[in-house]
Amino acid sequence: MLITPAYAQAAAGGDANSMLMSLLPFALIFVIMYFLILRPQQKKVKDHAELVKNIRRGDTVVTSGGLVGKVTKVVDDDQIEFEISDGVRVRQMRQMISGVRAKGEPAKEKGDFGKDETAAG
Image (cartoon, rainbow, N blue to C red; front, side):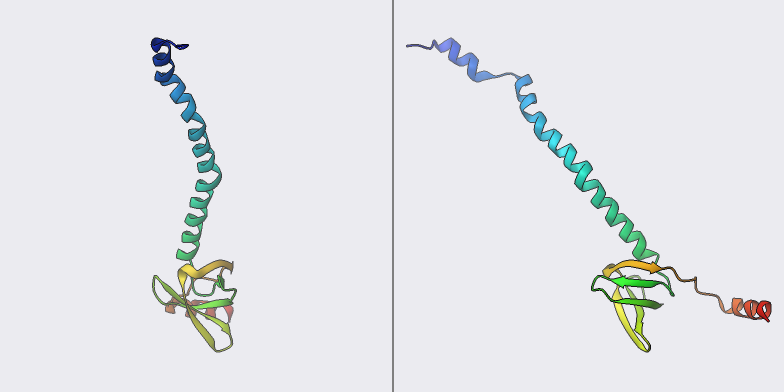
């Protein structure tokens, strides 16, 4: 026999250091993936949620289908109503808004209308 039993047992055992070194590339790949893929995606989702939450009446929005319109009414937490042409109003789920092109002015209170008219006149 060419290989003694003691030599064969020592080669098959391995040590913890070599196992750690063999797992190191996988850990490094996961860390790189996290910083290049997962973190930017999480940031993008967070920014979109903030954008959708802050939609107000008067904003010009772009839907994921490509429609562009001006928000006429915020129906509830899930829907908005916007006008895509004169007299054509559409209800849309907030999550399907892909961007806000122009921010509108905040809705004025009933008491504020009188103040603006007296100041202008």
